[in-house]
Image (tube, rainbow, N blue to C red; front, side, top):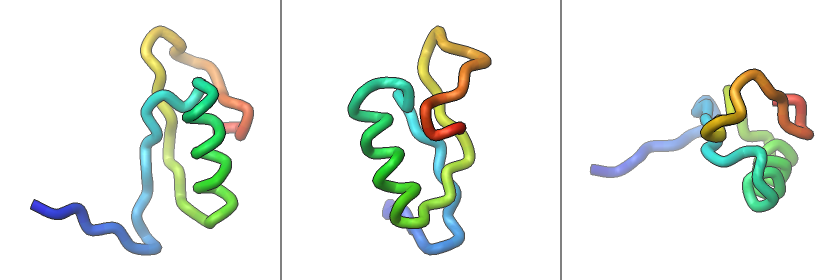
Length: 52
């Protein structure tokens, strides 16, 4: 089964508060990706450096 992605796709980023996650999230935002949320186990209620 393939995953279909287009300009209307909204994403949830797993591990958004880590170094790699934050870097790639910023790259995706710069590209225009619609990021709906980010999740990291044990860090509920926080916002990341990108304001997500």
